[in-house]
Length: 453
Image (tube, rainbow, N blue to C red; front, side, top):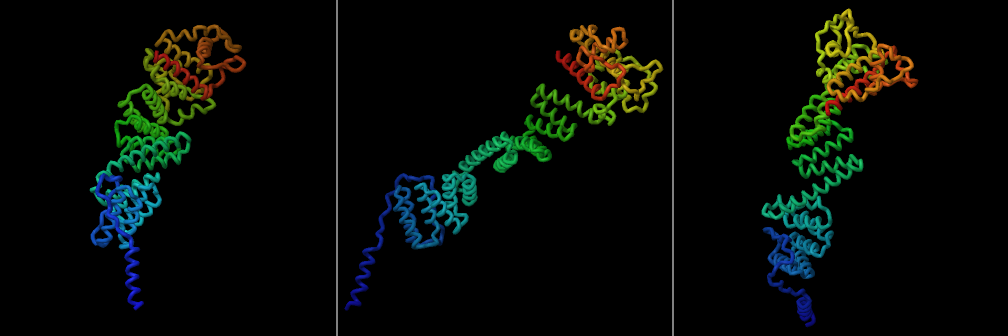
């Protein structure tokens, strides 16, 4: 008798204690319209499981998180492999702003089905809310790849990419300003990975790499910037600067000229002119390049120095008479010797020799410099006023009656040459390469200032 009563009593107790189903709310405006409903894949879950899952979603959209959790959990008890309910629990945690719990539930669903778009979108939302933008972007991109119907994700992805790019560029620029060049390079490379068609990123990276001494990488990225936008004058200028630092003068000139054609400027014109002169000098023989460090200067070297550095002045000279020189054939400096003698700034001796290997004395350098000053003054007479008091100069070793006095006093008054510490000029001392180079440099400054007037 007791044995028959007990099962009946147990059934009564179980039925009384069983969880009662509460009907989900009537459909209304969803509280979370951006949440992607975790649809039930075919052959996953029983009808009862799906019923509880749908009820959980209804409660979530009604804002009752406890009821939502209860129904999603019940669905998982009925079918432990029913991963859409894990997504439902993830979205419920996300609604509570419990980002770590949400990510955990989404990850479980993705483990079960790696291309389940609702889980990927939810995980992206939770990661973004947790401040993990890069991972969120990856999750959104994977979701869109898995389900192209999620078109609204495209704009979100683009916004995230723009923000990511802006932040990377800002970090790169701040690192560069602070001298943290390795950090700056890394930040620019990340920005380029996010936006490979943004030509300004390559240009700015090239500047950082140039500062870091990596000229090969700097040139490659500057040229990439030009490739992406041939009208980027700044990128062309940067490429020119890098080429110039590599002593690739012809290519650098081409780059500068292309930049100047797009955005003309006096600065670029000056740079082109300066580089043109450097390129010309770079192609000169070793005898010319060694002038500045030479303890003495030959007449051939002085002729070449004047002919190269002061070419424009000599061309404006009216003294271009034919000269006969018998000893310069085969000389490396023959073209410039002919130029300076035709312009009258260096003399041919009465026997028609130039004596290219003869050393230049300070008196000879003063005579040449004085004649060039005369050419400059003839071009602009007012400039001669700068040394009109030259005849008042006094030197302990050069009297006013000396044949070199006029030239010496003029070049000293003009600041082209300087006397010794004791005031003497030392006419017969051999001029050094440094003295000759400095005198020609100052004459060039005079000529340039006159040309600008």
